[in-house]
Amino acid sequence: MKVYLFVTCLLITLGANGQTSREPLFTSFDGTKIHYDIIGEGKPVVLLHGFISNSESWKRSAVRQALADAGFKVVTLDLRGNGLSDRPHAAEAYRDNTELKDVMALMKHLNLSNYDVVGYSRGAILTAKLLTMDKQVRRAVMGGISVDFSDPNWIRRRSFFEALTKPGSHPELQPAVDNAKKSGADTVVLARLQEFQPVTSKAELAKIKIPVLVVNGDQDKDNGDPQTLVDAIPGSRLVIVPGNHGGAMRTPEFAKAVVDFLKN
Image (cartoon, rainbow, N blue to C red; front, top):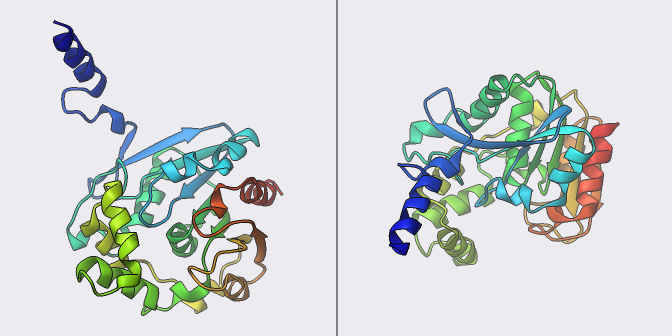
């Protein structure tokens, strides 16, 4: 009897299809369902997570709550293929900047305009492309990245794609692949994300007119020299905070840099 009651309560909690925990969900332009969360009230800001990650990375960092406390409405989402969002495998689901189309459609769905964007690592790569696509973006923060992503043949992107599709091809990246599998990430999706990762050229970066802050950990050289990105975006500036690539975004110093920039 106790077992029956436990199972009944579990089904009620999860729902008939076991998907209630994914709510809230937004149906994007092509039918892909995107999980998102919102905290705070005020000026809107959307946070874009990195590779082999999801929006939980922001919930474990200081910056999300710091922004809410500073008077921002903070939107986080699991980019398609990640976390609680749908994980399509077809190439068509990832080419032509579909991830950015999701972000733009979600913000429109939420009736949020004139918003700010904070992207970290691969999320910063997406942020750069978003600045070329959506005039609603007011200010942007890009963390943990250099200008290297502007090269369509960037060796780091190619190496990750090969490591995910050709086992043993890049032993130096095998720990990252193993970690992805252990965390429950979909390696087919991860390969697609590298295959169709947005590229923003240096010429496009040079045309960015909005305020941009680049933030990097003092021990982080994973994605190259962040000063090269500052040099590529007119009027942008660099703030160095403590930490390596995985830890810098969780520090109070990162949170302070982002809040101070977006409040001014």
